Amino acid sequence: MGIEQKLGNLGIVTTNLEQVVNWARTNAMWPMLFGLACCAIEMMAAQASHYDMSRFGMELMRASPRQSDLMIVAGRVSRKMAPVLRQLYDQMPNPKWVIAMGDCASCGGVFNNYAILQGVDEIVPVDVYVAGCPPRPEGLIHGIMTLHEKVKQEKFTKWG
Image (cartoon, rainbow, N blue to C red; front, side, top):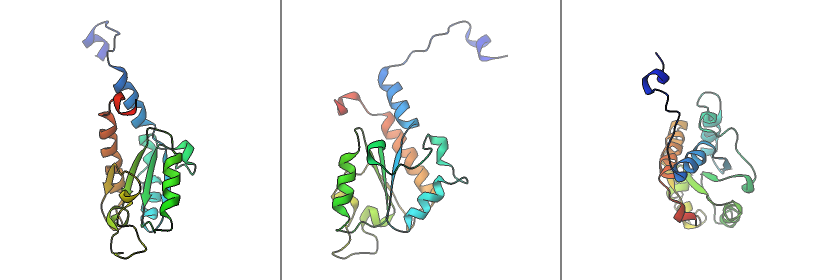
């Protein structure tokens, strides 16, 4: 007994354009790798076969900002690296999202000094924070799922 027998011969699917576009955005995010410290190893582990971020449509990490719509900042950001990070963020096409991975990217971590940014949100807007030092790959995947839920709720007026 299949779904065709339960529903009859309807053959009609109704939705709105925002839901279709947001579904496509969540299932085809292309992350840009920006691994700066030990969190980058955990980001690579999340991409590897054991955790397999490919099941979320993230087949590979992009090295070009013009082909990415998600920036994962993994690790501590020095004041010297901040302008480079901002320039890469500005080169990404809209809509774009940022995940701050790890305590160093979120709030400076144990590096409370003048050379390290006390959170990457000083230079780019952050959508999701992933806690941990270093965060486990499961934490990054949870952050991506949280971002997917956020993207599914977006309206076209935000980008218009």
